[in-house]
Image (tube, rainbow, N blue to C red; front, side, top):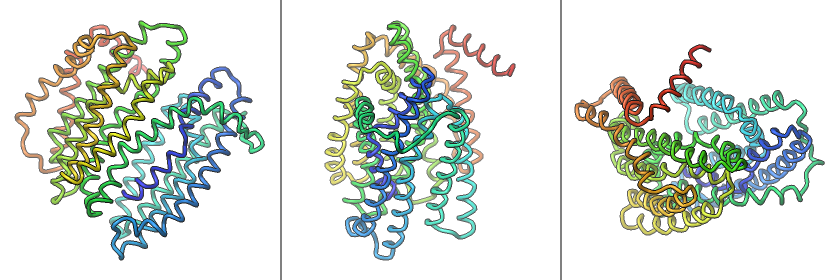
Length: 455
């Protein structure tokens, strides 16, 4: 996990070009300008190739230095180096290979992206179990991850070649002037990447500097559960082109409605996930990791509360990017790393692991409260309306579920846990349809379900 955090910071060298490629390719594909698209993709590909080469050399050199910086046991130094070099090679290749996922997003073929991700994750789970049962160790798991990344890249390349047969990627089409043009948008995305990396990756490094290395594992368990829950917040990125479309037509009322409705659904869904983890998290960690990870539980709780507060602003993030209202977004992204690093260093010395988690949560509360004030102003929405239409609907929908949770027994098996989790979300879904969704939204859902059923 320490290696992943260190190498993860190399992703900052992306310089925000990944979301820029998605936005630019979507625009050019809509216009049918494949020639300009080829020039743009060629420029980004060559630039990525150069970045990947730099990353590879840096990580190779760090393999001889970092074991002395962190508290790595002498018997683990060789393993640390091998893991760092394999993960580093994967990171170096991921830069030029990122163009395939960017183009697939530009095509809005999210069904293909999600389908490949599901298959890769299922295959990874099965092969991980097979390797561990067969007696293989950490290095084999790292190699497995690298191999599956290669499979994913090749699948993306095949798909793009099939969907855009006239696309041509040539080194001679690289132009620095084109990079400068793309940098106007990518600069803001780059700042956002820095903030995101520091907010969710710096914790492990700070723990590695101030606490025993084994503490990272305890923290990672709580962090991993929280990060898995946050996946629901990242499903809304496809809202960005819709925002751009409505903004170009100056349909402010529909943008406002999109903000309120989208926020209600995302906040309600994530609130249900958070409450489920508050109820079942202790049993989940015990069944997953066994004894000795009790300290992971308060870490998970603290991080979940911070993520829940942030969830009410996720829709607004993508809306502001889509309508090019980036000034407030940029200010927030500059604020995040400064506050988080300061609080993390301060709190880790006083409260240890839970202090690091609290630092992240407090940072989210401060930053998102600042952001929410500006969001309401931009979309001309009163706070009382937001609380009534989004938050109240989400909270009332959970009331029947919380009542049912009072009768929850001790969950001492995966089967029992799975049954209670399924029952929890089924009850929440029915409750949300009855209480949280409007009659118009329920009618729209029935039409969608009927259409899917007929297919």
